[in-house]
Length: 595
Picture 1 (spheres, rainbow, N blue to C red):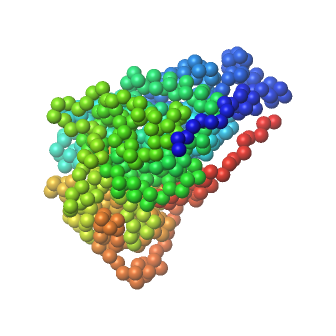
Picture 2 (cartoon, one colour):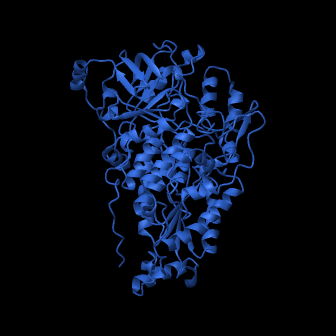
Picture 3 (cartoon, helix red, strand yellow):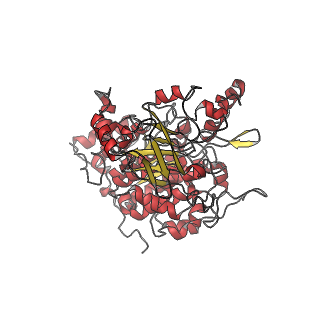
């Protein structure tokens, strides 16, 4: 049955902000006084919805360099719709700059976003993010706070060109680095690439984690239709920001908060979009965490089940060869959702107040199709990007969830970005206990490894990393690169960048640092991967594993205080979303008392 907005519109006295500003006691006087201290007239903010703009701009977040300017567009929309805007800085989490990994701070941003909303006189919020962890972090906080919100995606950067090929950040950086490492690209050329590949503000222009997560949020109904594909520097982007500002004011009066429309159907739609896009494996961590904030259990097996039904139908790196600029011209996410409409709950409500089905039905056809002779960016489900074959029916899937004695709680792989010949593989393990050890070893010309070796990195999980860094795309040893090897089976309890590719098994759970079976693996053990059976096993007897278990001791952790210490004590494992135990769930938190 189609969901509708059937609740009466809010009245002024029902707005949260009125608790701060309409109070006739000394506290209300002080609140109004301090607003006027900033030069705002009493009439400017009294009697209007107060809208927060949570902005993850910073000088060290290049993908969000334009968001300070976009906030001005949001403010114009809010004012024109009769609201009053307040811009609030939130942790920026620029993916490349933040160390040891932005993932360790996703929950920090979620806490900050939630408490900014709770502690201040806000009736609704515009969430400005896009770079990888900012999207789930902001949404997790907003779901927990549960006031009207709309997500404004930063948008992808535009393309560069190199040797006649459209290129961008992330995927091409990894490809070119491998060639530079063995001398196929010279130093002068490498420095030139450094200065030209990322040409504008905006997120990575592949279907990496940034675009995957903004697409997921749009499919959930939390963004305006078509918003996630608009390039950051396109003139449509400030217009979209303005529209977000106007819409959030109406959402406040409608009391259209997440709990009224974000439900299991919303997450199911998001998962369908994720698989059709060939999205980042990182979404397999963020989706359970986001769903948990809405009180919706979501496990890895549900992701795997959808992946079996929905092939990758979008030709974008790293599964394909296209970039986000072409995706925008092809119609963006609504054009994809039209192709998979039979798998969607079209009655799911969105921030527009209309259903997802209504929005995609009204979405115009793309103005510009592919060039003559070129393959389409967006395909029909019966013409997937990577057709299944008799030898490898899983080749066109965006995700597969593995289990076995190496990963009893699960691990993930992205078949569409892997080598089909390696998806059923048996090989000898070469185990590294740290990223530092691994990086030293891969350049050693005497390294005991061949193309059939399985490279394993452990102590890269949520506790061990700490923060589950993107170390899982282990580099191919230099001596094998020179032999022409460009892919190997690689296993880690860490993550990998959504822009990267290869036969990489990730998110092994439980992780090695807490005693997961990966901690018991030894160099020389045989590992067997069978994607058809969804199995990942070490061929070691139970008796031998029991002996190793008795001898195993956890490594000492150097973090005796501070946020990282809190993180390690609170974080759940990858299969549960790596949220904090004390933050997950939908139990209500009281509004702050005002005295």
